[in-house]
Amino acid sequence: AAQEGFDPEEVEGALGEAGHGPLPVLAVVGRPNVGKSTLVNRIIGRREAVVQDKPGVTRDRVSYEAEWAGRRFKVVDTGGWEQDVLGLDASVAAQAEYAIETADAVVFVVDSTVGATDTDEAVVKLLRRAGKPVVLCANKVDGQSGEADATALWSLGLGEPYPVSSLHGRGTGDMLDAVLEALPDAPAQKFGTALGGPRRIALIGRPNVGKSSLLNKVAGEDRVVVNELAGTTRDPVDELINLGGITWKFIDTAGIRRRVHLQEGADYYASLRTAAAVEKAEVAVVLIDSSESISVQDQRIITMAVEAGRAIVVAFNKWDTLDEERRYYLEREIETELAQIAWAPRVNVSAVTGRHMEKLVPAIETALEGWETRVPTGRLNAFLGEIVASNPHPIRGGKQPRILFGTQAGTKPPRFVLFSSGFLEHGYRRFVERRLREEFGFEGTPIHISVRVRE
Ligand code: GDP
Ligand code: GDP
Image (cartoon, rainbow, N blue to C red; front, side, top):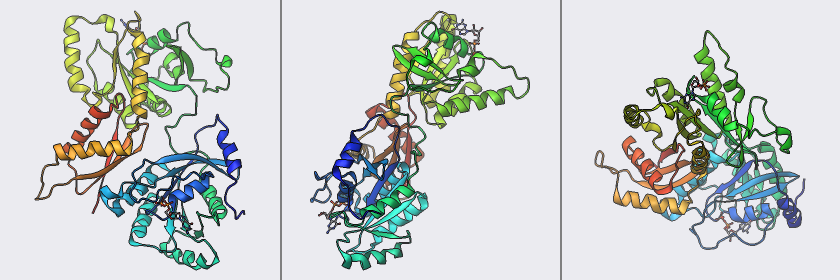
């Protein structure tokens, strides 16, 4: 294997290409000053320094595209995390946490001239628990004499330490060969879309709410002839439909159109089919028959979409049938029965008259936007700081748990990791979620918040 670093021009050329699917993600993790940023620069073959000599410089994670031995992947630099806020250990733990949540493989960088510290050992524990493949980079081995320091890092129990000089490029080739072995071909992130492909919609709801009527209404004359759309492949049960000038992929329309009547287990099959459609979709449009009371079955279908982490729009169908009285009761029912998705955009439509069909697309777009929103770490922490100051957690048993730091670990749907000094009560988490929504939007998307208590 090659012993040199990268040829910058070769990498530059590779970066110029476009039109590929999602790439596997490699996170580079380690204590401050071990050389993470230097290594990332080396991997992406770029000289202009992201390296900061000032410790504790705040910058957000940055992700770059890279290529090695003909394979492309993304590299995420976790350098510069806010150690001042949390202290060293927790800031490094936050990086590891992030890597665990989002990366397909991790390069763990250790300064071999310093050796394994307690902080390094703590990160190893986190990484091992996560079960993601880890490649151990014994950095700052600038020459032969440093090899022994690298060997000492076998003690971390992460397998072979790769002796590397990120500064000079020594040993990076062998290390990257190991990285390629650890990386899967495609990212594990389930919710990713292929670049430029049509967005995927699942139209769901219990029988007779009007799914097939709505589909026929929106598909109308605007049916897309699939062969005309270059480079699209589709599942025969899915359908490409033009709405508001945009082509969307409606999932499992065959299941909606052909109403298979199964005597036994019909509900079971319907719900299985719904689950499969939701799994394949990015956004779920939940149809509700507004002429009838909101039922347990409606709620079960909504829960399915929420738990799958999809963007959600609620369409109240058969609006043409409503009188004043029913409308009044419906509003009350929505408040009590649909509280769990109070954040979802709502449209009141009629598949029969075509009422408000034009509002469907903007609602879907709003939901997808919320689903993909990313809050920069700096902004998030400024906001969390305000919350802690203005609405501290109630004191419990003489102690007051405090949010120390937070980061958004992912999107589609947005996922947050909060680090706290103690257990945060359910009510307080709910409060934080509500304030997050008020501050940053997230209309139409579930959000996940997990809390790690720093012992
Ligand atoms: P980070 O905080 O982990 O991102 O570390 P940096 O990439 O900012 O590097 C910290 C310092 O270590 C900088 O002064 C780098 O020039 C230096 N450094 C990084 N890699 C090496 C290496 O392989 N050998 C030597 N001698 N110094 C290195
Ligand atoms: P699906 O089982 O969810 O696909 O529901 P269908 O589309 O088959 O609709 C069930 C029944 O509701 C049919 O008789 C439709 O004509 C009727 N329906 C659907 N949408 C509307 C609507 O907006 N207004 C009214 N009045 N009836 C509707």
